[in-house]
Amino acid sequence: MATATLPGPADLDERERAAVEALLRALADDEYVAAERYIDWQVRGPTLEADISIANIAQDELGHARLWYDLLQDFGYRERDLIWEREPDDFRHATLLELPFERGDWADFVLRSYLYDVAEYLRLEALAGSSYPRIADRVAKVRAEESYHREHAQNWLERLCDDEPGRRRVQDALDRLFPRALTLFEPTDREDDIVDLGVRTESIETLRGDWLAIVAPYLESLGLRVHDGEADLAALLPEERGRDGTHTAHWRRLYNEMTYTYEMLGRREPRRIMPDPDDE
Image 1 (cartoon, rainbow, N blue to C red):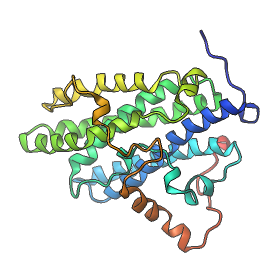
Image 2 (image 1 turned 90 degrees about the vertical axis):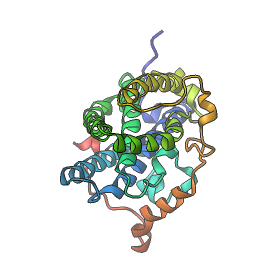
Image 3 (image 1 turned 135 degrees about the vertical axis):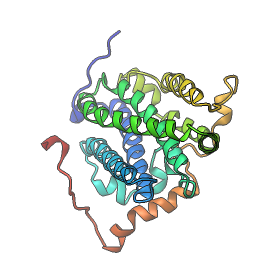
Image 4 (image 1 turned 120 degrees about the vertical axis):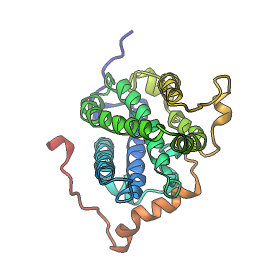
């Protein structure tokens, strides 16, 4: 049965608004924190072209975060409430995205990007038909840029796995990061409503299955070992999962770095240097 189109932000009932807000916070926080971590690799990549690509990808992710945070501002939130003066434990990003990269390990960056980009691709596919038009209207712009991110990660994975030393480095990164990548598919506390109302057209469980069906065969084709197919995925999940407000100690340090300049300058309202997406 087709899901009814939801009304605009001012006319949502309490259940509808809570579902839309929960989904938008997960979307926006994922993109923002991913971008902040990608910045760690700027001017540290193995080639000049890689440095330029990382800068472009980080900028794209920040722009995507702005698209989703902007929709939360429809509900009366200010940017400072959503980022700069928000309690760290209130963020709902997956904990994969807050981890620092292994020092000097390009394989960590590339593998992590690939795992996230495939998850993002599937999530956007499930949002293209969202019952909330304000979300569906913004998917096309994000999806076009994310396809480049996924292609960039795959190209580098294939280069790294072309010889045994590089493949070992990617395997080490995969063993370390795979459990954390599963946190991308942890539900928010409004998951049932998000699906029932059609805010996202697929469940988190379905998206995780689709993600595994893509990443496992691809990585295995590069000579990598992915998780045991018989393993209980729930048993692989780390204690800190992000969507429920639990985070690693790395997150508070990253949050303090993110907000340092804002606090030192005594800001009470951030200056917007990007146009409102609705004005573009």
